[in-house]
Image (cartoon, rainbow, N blue to C red; front, side, top):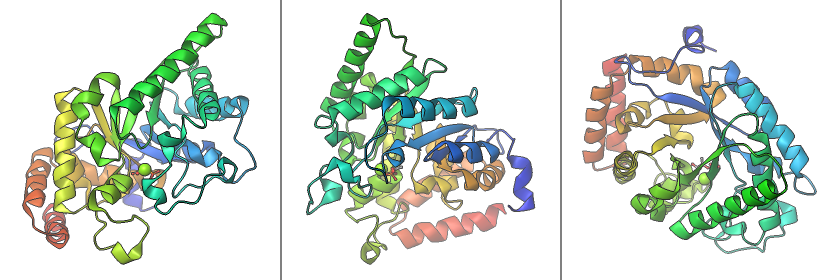
Length: 324
Ligand code: PEP
Ligand code: MG
């Protein structure tokens, strides 16, 4: 690691004018969590739990999941932990789900859309989280929500499990429920979703893919797939405005969060948190410390007024040479 980032590992993440921006970590398991906290992660902003379902013969049982979640909660100490429920399908295949081949897997059967059919597995995961949460409150996040009914369905399942546990004198811990904003339709009904959720996290990888109609993994459309598209930045501004209007904590956990050049735009959006791979955290904290939040807000408005991705990139390069 660059020497200059080292002092930032233990420093509170904030801008030059002391606007706070929590820096969380994206993790796939316990080891990752340990490393991320070693790099100064202030929270776990995204635990991609589908990774514990992958590359094995059958789903992890309740006991195994409780052990994994508990270890991460212990490592986190007082820091918040967002556990995303399994996001299986499309780019995250799991053989034993035996999902049929689809022409458009990204537009098909994945993530929350699988939960009603794989209800037993979803219930095991929710129970494991509720048990692990005895030790410390957990933030639970649902992937790929596209309409209100999905949120109401999830709430109902969780509520039923809590009631059953209560009846069986099984103690469960407190959780707060959030959703990922990664499907454009969800971004346009934040007023309807907000009463039913405690927080939002923007998944810029999928949101950009669905919003720009460009496959995130197809190099042929790589020039179109950019979170710096002015139209996408307009969407992000609209989303963060809406979530603020409804007083809902809002993070962003896609790859955009690890992009040093894009950081001023994220500060300009006024997000509460960004979550990224642990190794990037010290550099992001360092860069953040040089930024001024009102300059970042102005920059965001300039970026939104640009007429191409290239123009936004040029604007960010000029801004970088201004501040460093
Ligand atoms: C995203 O879509 O931005 C996201 C964080 O989820 P994943 O990359 O795991 O699909
Ligand atoms: Mg996603």
